[in-house]
Amino acid sequence: MYRKIQENLIKWQKDFKRPLMLVGAKQTGKTYILNEFCQNNFANYIYLNLDKEEDIKNIFEQTIDPDAIIEKIEILKNIVINPENTIIFLDEIQVSERAISSLKYFCESSKPFKIICAGSLLGVKINRFKSSFPVGKVDIKYLYPMDFEEYLMALKEDKLIQEIKNHFESNEALLNPIHEKALDLYKKYLVLGGMPAIINNFIENVNSIAHVNFELQEQIITSYLADMNKYTENSEAIKNNQIYKAIPKELARVNNTFKYSIVDKDARRIKYESSLDWLIASNMIIKCDLADKNESPFKAYANSDKFKIYLSDTGLLRSLANIEYNEIILDKNEIFNGVLTENYVACHLYPKAKELYYYTFNKYEIDFLLKIDGNIIPLEVKSGRRNNSKSLNEYLKKYKPSYSIRISSKNFGFENNIKSVPLYAVFCLNK
Image 1 (spheres, rainbow, N blue to C red):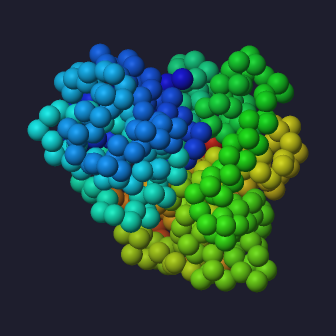
Image 2 (spheres, one colour):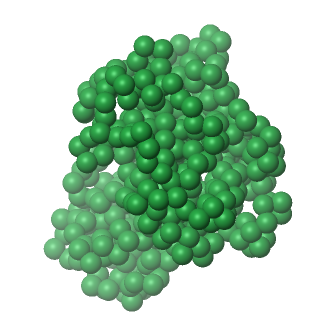
């Protein structure tokens, strides 16, 4: 399946200067993508898994000199490595801090060593690096679950993608049957989420949502919880588990600003803050801060005491909440449909913005604040077609933005200074 990150990898290959590190949550497809890229674009390719190959890991414990490392790999593997046409993929690199440190010296070497790496919880490792992380010596790219556009690509809906993009730009309504088709595909995506294994299973079952093996989502969640136990001390692992499992309950509240008391009635920020940071760094969750002012830069006005937490994938959120797929497809669960919808929008905005903010004034709330072409744009999310919103109308009256955006099931349009964007076109906001 095609992933947009491939464009970044090709660019890295052409303008190679530094080793590349691919960061992302487990099961997002890092190993698959890098394996395909290495096989298809280099004459020689060496795959090394540091979690499974203890002898390779031990090389880095003995030396971080590139020439010595390559020489020992050649001996162990009985191969000759030509740096001109060979790429080395170090998978699960997070298990060796010394291997990460060695990337600095591979970057500075006079030889054109081509090193690419990935690993589970690599984001956490970077944040908690005990040695000196090779800042400026590594190209870091991020891989997220497949977005709605990549999902449509996997379904070979290329013409539909282009039609959506065209109407996003023109603000003209799509032909209604096409609009309804896109909405149907969106509902299925809301259930499936963007984990490649789930989407692949959907395709293998001839795009039948009823025949999808949803146990795959449960297995991914189980692997996430297992990693929390594997890579953290027991006390922190317990807190990580508690926060992760509490997210559906946090989001389902009318005021879904994060409350530690939902995680544990006796919880305090000082006790759980490091666990929250761990989950954010792992890319398992997304944080959305309250901006005290709707001014740029948002970060300068972030309120560290008030924020929302979203899961990194809507399919995993549905599974974690134990909501049956037909409740979403048939609109039988209005409350949680709204929760999934808001989470879906957050997942699509975050990869480009890297930071998310919401805003409150008086008694009103704006779901997200965006900065587009230098302008502060309020964005409102609705799961259905009913678009009456006092919050957005009051914002327009009070602050008079150049325009605003409403995400909903309604067709494209532009009226009363509100750009109407259908739920299936949220990916266009990242262009």
